[in-house]
Image (cartoon, rainbow, N blue to C red):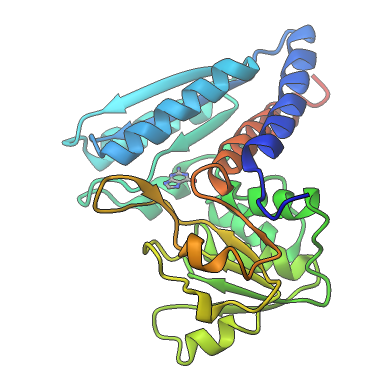
Length: 284
Ligand code: GUN
């Protein structure tokens, strides 16, 4: 086996399982449905939303898209979320982030029913993750854990370093590595001796949002390197947070960008949507 972690291959497996579950639900008369809300015209968000629709089509999930104008008010957005919460035919609700600056993201996340919160961003779901008793896991960190599992990498007893402390990736990522018995350090923009700490990592996860942030001197020989970055370079090409050419020779396993973590994030979203449909239809 090479050292490249094939996210597309693992994502295909996860989606295949989700598709079988969607089919089984259909036989019970349940059409799994995901509602996706996009406010404004951020180009990156448009691409993400389009890809989510493609994934839904591929595995038999019905997708409802709500494209709202940049001028949408907080009240209008909350009204839509509440309507979707009430609809029994909608299993999952995802509001694409970031929202335009005039909108209150936290309030929107809070308004989504925790039972339909397929991103696992609602405080109730975040709390459940903290204590290890969750229904949904956030898509990117869960995708990373699945990649590690499929490549036979356990965090148990290992030094794990996560660079980045966002609510979407860094914090939950650290928690999942901890649940897998890793010894976890979270680094961020105020961290001193960042390179030295990263060099101790057996598993290094970069979720910074800066191209080529992780250089070869920050990586231990034979480390497993996971790149969550989705940056565009000067030429508009998609690239990660890791200086891939320089780091790859030192790593025992490494995710490419694209084709590493990205496809996994999307696959876990499909899995979460199916799980939501199952939870909402128990004993029906
Ligand atoms: N923006 C960037 N990543 C995500 C994600 O995983 N979910 C949502 N809703 N918005 C995002």
